[in-house]
Image 1 (tube, one colour):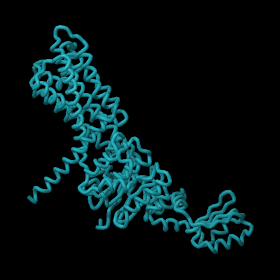
Image 2 (image 1 turned 135 degrees about the vertical axis):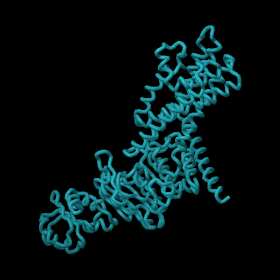
Image 3 (image 1 turned 30 degrees about the vertical axis):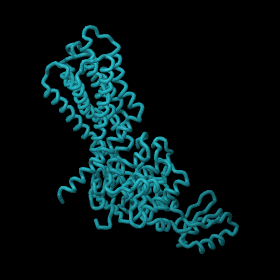
Image 4 (image 1 turned 30 degrees about the horizontal axis):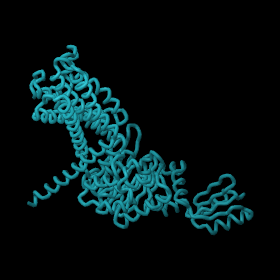
Length: 305
Length: 263
């Protein structure tokens, strides 16, 4: 653990009965970083968040938060958590909820600041039960910000939001984190991950299968996708050193390449009559699907063994 | 001064949280019609029927006093088991307890505030019943007796909070209400407050002495010299033992469950 570490996990393991949720996982999250946990359901993301928050106990390994045991009062004072919960009492108003959570901290943010940051203006007197799903999420977010936390832990924060509200929420998280605070976010939304994260950690069956910046993850499958409806044979491109990955479905050929120009020329030479030629940057989704493909997962586990 | 100041500051901080938690708990319950009508309404309605409407014959004055004590006790039992135990179980199942645990509030304050809320509701129920009794049948209970009754009955809520807590943590969030329901009525029937202890069959009487309801109601009956004459300390010890065993077992189930999934 160094002074710059917010989370320091070494060989942590957590099981629920016979089900292994996290297996020998080591992960360090440094201060002022923005980490996004991705992965399919049951991959271990929420278990990791709950361990970090001190809500679950480790089976093995060591885990420290700000140099303290998870759940330690001094760590809890520095963390703001937005969890996926449905049980916020529905008969209390927004103002009453905020007022209650403010008492938990020595120097809470003011109600006016919280209402502004979570865009709850005009809703202060409404009860939680009368709010829409998106508005309820905004109150959850405000509760997470009450203590002006240095470390924000968010579990799928933009679920239930419409497009506009989702983008607004991302802006708010972005503004709040700024350059000083640390973010740990679990999400299924790749756009959210790319928008808020500077480090993407992909979980699969309790293990980390990828850990890199969004740019680097994209570059793992080639930075550009070339697609066309063509008669050209995919095998020809296997000898092209710029081509990182090839897919051929229903007459469409997709090539993920580091440098597109030479490959586009090659493709046009092979099939001048090709149709629907498109050249676009590879997305995080492409990288995500590639990294979680059964073949790639097998390679990863073989390499780990 | 430098040693005392942080202690005072911590104590004030703690008191602020406890006050805010208790106040919001009380508001929350008052604004939940199911809670207010069931917990507050049930003992009051029983009192109106059994204490005021039904004529119990020669022992009319004693029966007025009996039903005031009995229905106040029913209120305390319901508030503790349903208002505390079932609500904690529900909030745990829905994740509210988890959010509290990861925030920097001392989690025992959450339980303490809920227990205070339960006691406050017991006070409210006893006061309503006493007010009705004094207003409509001029029940013979002095101000001191009435005040002591409120104190004894409301404090007897605590063991029922612990029993409810055990049901909540042992049965799980979704079945806690059913388990408490199954326990509630037999406890009332066996404890000698719905049916007076004297007219219970002998074998039921022998079972009744093991129930917490028997002991908490005996403490209250002492106020009108209608108890069976067991020493006060024996009732207190039994109630303390119930509370201790229930809270210990609840703690065991809580820790075991925490390692699995719920907050």
